[in-house]
Image (cartoon, rainbow, N blue to C red; front, side, top):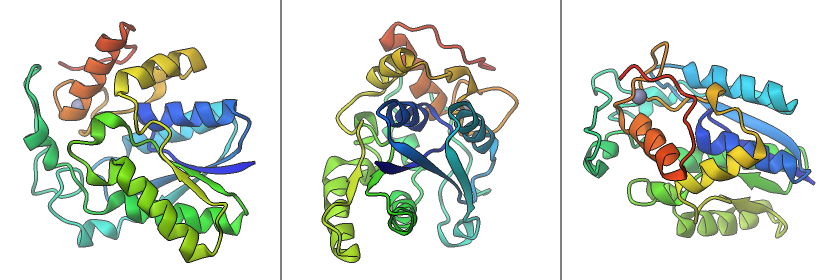
Length: 222
Ligand SMILES: [Zn+2]
């Protein structure tokens, strides 16, 4: 069985990669450059893929930056927000939405999958993303799978987010069992030498390790 996995170098998609390989899929990985302000995460994705010895392509889509403006992840005019430790940060997280990002990535991944005769396409959306990112919800994944089966006249296509009903701390627990080298993964929305510790993504990562009662191997600036 062949699978195409979208991986960003972060906690969720790296865990998904390990899970996919462990389940004996012949695994093909795509990582997208979509005009992020930093590409630190791309280096992490490369390392993770090298460690697993899987096929890996980095796809340049930096042109999207000019089309999909307004996100703190791509737009130099929008600061990556810092959030207090205890805050519910939905409002600040909203600035990190890149419009239609998962649909765009999945469309490309499915085109690639069809061309290499892979029937499985996986991405790392999880339950904790649900409140903020509409294209990380189960309803979206199911509808997209349906659309792509029609688009490719292939009822065997499986488009899935295996973690869609899992919280991030459960993913971390699973990843530790699978031996995911979390030290190599990158979550920070800023792009420094080490994780900033205060952007919403760093906060979420810290919280997930705390809730999982697992020591986070990440070095944080704050
Ligand atoms: Zn950060």
